Length: 329
Image (cartoon, rainbow, N blue to C red; front, side, top):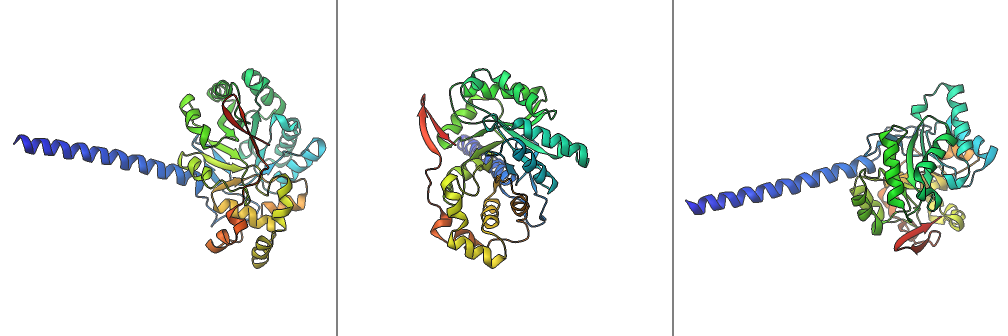
């Protein structure tokens, strides 16, 4: 009888362990799907589908990056993007254009009647003085953008006081002034320790990703944590953009679909479950970038050439700062 009880208890223990493991696996699988499986089948050009972040908020999967845009050029680009249906705008303190981004959004909302809530705005605070005084930095972004609240605040790079800075973002989330938190230029080496040190899991990691720098380990690793992945150089970083756009294999795929090389690259990102924020001040290019939902790349096309399976670029320079890996834009 004792043996039967022991075996039953052991079986129950094993079953409970199995159930827990299965439960964790199901949760992980659901988290992965939520941030990486984009609804591309029913999407239409001019309207990017959305994903639901782990913060509960929805974010479009295609937007406008403003890294190199300044002054009136930036305002016109943001206005053009919004007019053509883009609802995701990325900026940062270091881009020196938060003011122009905010002005363009306010003017568009007033003129078009599109609710502010339909536009998702990402900005970032930078290591150094801003990480040392994060509350001041976050409030500066709120005041400069002047769009009621910030949809997502990122830490621009790992650095001294990054935990302190992130916890300041958490405070602003509690106040309703920021809705989601995330990271830029974080990799597998840093992410687990970072998550263990904060209260709110990052909703997004924004890194350099493109066909020459695919981050095949990083992308699924983050997605398995329920963290969305966004490419800040989706068309290739600095010296690689022209190389990508003139790549013969990509051009051949583009010709077969009657689209541009840029559209093929952006579609490649989206089919990998990576959010893309290409930058442009050209209205025709902006329209082209939001028009990638009327064709689909085959599995063969996704994997076709050595170029499309990736060659690591040296665009992002990694350097060690106080024991952390930093990747600079």
